[in-house]
Image (cartoon, rainbow, N blue to C red; front, side, top):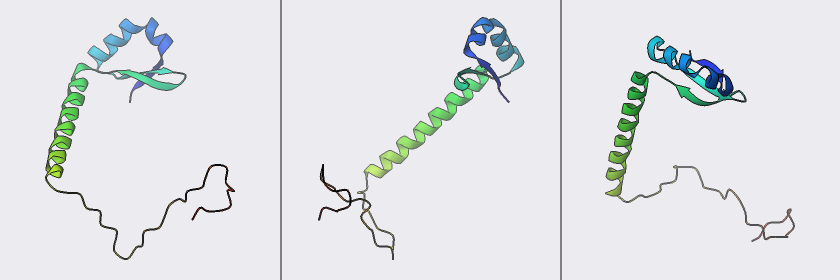
Length: 100
């Protein structure tokens, strides 16, 4: 569980927060108006996040490269007709009528 602290208080207690994170392994979420805006995490946590991010990007690149070799063809679901989701209405037209 992360410790939450308002940004104004975090600014005043920054050195103590850094020590709690670095030596105590705590995670600190800095908030503004009750909403999270930043976090202080141990360096080991940041390393794991960056490794996960690199693995995710590598996977996306591989999938993207494979998809470029094959054309994309849309196949509607069997047994389900495709309907029109919206109709064009001219600007200033009667909202109760449809343009044909």
